[in-house]
Image (cartoon, rainbow, N blue to C red; front, top):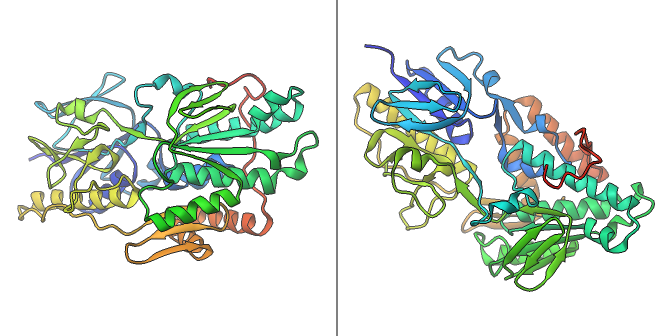
Length: 423
């Protein structure tokens, strides 16, 4: 009998945890990803806001498995799955057979039917997104320095974040601190302390998945940093000139979208039911309906907890799902009974607001302020890959904490001085 072949599509948290936990299982594994690196997405906003460099939160997948002869890494984009012949199709026309398939293809931005907004309001899911946002943010300050029209200068110095979940809140806090504490001494014609950071949220409060008391604390912390909160306002239009909400028009030349996500087209590949965000509605063992040899994990999967609430699309959930699927595969290969249905164990929700404030919700235990910020930092450093990355990130944070200076403020693209609103 030929060696069992597991194909894993996606090198995110779920995919990596699965491959790690299948070490020594005596099987052949192929991992396919559109990019050659694994990304520590929880810190992506810190690349966008000049705190960290790209190499500190991303690692080549090939390097991670260089000592695993059972793992083959392929750079490619899967565009379809034929479950009848158990084959995945790549964009370059090649196909790959599998015995077991694991789809961990993640999610992208959701513009609720207005995909034309993406050009002027990029989301934050990839390194490319982060460097685009960083470039636009830094260029806004540079152009404001030479702009003579007051209205245009004010629009350049207005940064609008759409969506007050963790990404929007974290971005808003860091941009506000950058403008008020890091940059003022470096410009001569503008006062960066007058920068407007606007956070627009259609819901009734910021960080709606957190306890209300923590949400209130986050709102106050953001306002102390000078962030303008536009709560209960729907976005009606995004253009290169600004954001039209249900209440007013906000002239703004830099817009970031953090309002929603859309799953990969995995449900369409398999022709199975999906939820409103396009996630595959999986079985209790995380398999796709009517496809016991196809597992779906992470942001690609819609998993419902015992309480009826969905499992959140966060890194710990994806890692737990990857570990669970590895157990199921091992049990099947050994002819043992299947593990009990997947059960998500919530380990807490964390969000940071600026340089020394954060909130943590462990359920009964709720923390806020600088103590929460230190716990948040230690937790994130712990989950980074490799001693070098942990040391580099810890040093960057310590330096910023002590000096207030961000170290990753380089504009490197050759298109620097052209109009790149659609870049």
